[in-house]
Image (cartoon, rainbow, N blue to C red; front, side):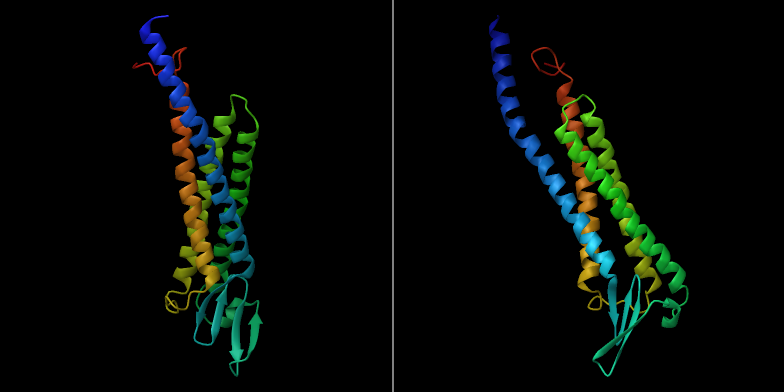
Length: 203
């Protein structure tokens, strides 16, 4: 074996040792972030109370008012809030927000399966899962934007509740996981296109 071949194998061994540690760690971190986003979004949607304006509490499922600053009286009929288009618009907002969670769960499942199985299609499963996270971000952000648009006259920064910010955080984590997942997958595929010694064609 030539000196060039020996040097190439040493470089390959060093690169593989770094990648064998960093690549699974990054993928595990992406899966963890996505799991957290699914939990945050699920809790936020189930609670649904996203905006407090004076003595009124607006949510995805209910409209609540307070009597004597103590008792909370909630109605499922959002038309009682006397906000134009709130009932139909909120149905769209909660539908797309719920669909975002469903899409993210399927994406998370694909990511986990791609890490368990070692077949040649693993990279494809990871790419599809990351793309589903991007779709989940679009749907989740669309739900947030719909909610804010419907209640634009009542929205204040201090009036937005913790559950609203939980959904906002989940939406950001969906986007971050999608971009990171697609980037990591593209790097892994590029590294897999190598010569028998594992070096890029340019070498």
